[in-house]
Picture 1 (cartoon, rainbow, N blue to C red):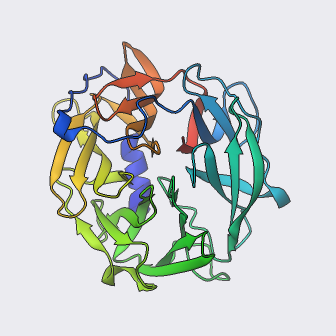
Picture 2: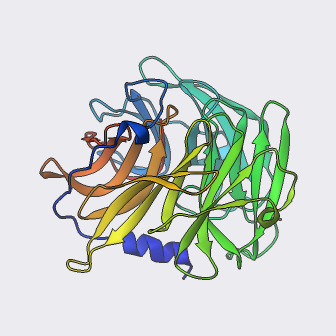
Length: 348
């Protein structure tokens, strides 16, 4: 069992009462370009309520929770496994693969005013002919919401047995120049759990399980860095007191936002902690405890950097919820009506 599987097991905690989020000071407020949350969420989901089938890409209204867009079908039977906001408002990129293929493929699309998926087309760099890493289920894929960068993790060259690779590769695709920068990373040094890219595309964030332990750490690396061993180019972000299972970068890359678990010594339930750190120094700006009990691993930061989407199981406003958005400026968590039972990837 790899550490990520252990983290997933830890996340499967029963649901109980919620703890109200604390308000952030104006010094800690998130900076965003819009005060309103996004209207639609794009979800790569295994189970949509009332529908059969697996691993489809659909859009969900943040107001009603209803599915707004039709099923997206990738060419050649490829499965959409991860999605991210990319390039401009209302535009996205999706990563697809096939179970027995040894490559990952990328497609762009946009949402109509009604939230429907339209304009599907291959990315300018449409394919990386490397082995997918099936074990990565937190954030194996990221993109710059207003810039040209798409980032993906693969297991390296094809033709090897399907097992966890000894070396993984992290690819930064620059769509503007149609170039790919590849960094290598031995899994004995770090097993990646989550990728993030600043909205402007200049900085990549990474969290993972380090030193063959269940503890995670976080790093950043400029996307302009030369190809080669990643550990020679990254910068460690100190994230105390709790290690992150997911991380995001503010639009300008100056702040890293992390999601972590905190176990109660009394009830043994897990709370969700959302923290903010300066990427230059690692200094913590704020830490907010959201729920007294929480289970889940899927999160998404909106392109403004103001709202964090939370998917899992938790109690909010006295009832069990599966999706909510956290306003990082005010600390208020707002439930989104349930549309899915499980999401593999979310973007908005």
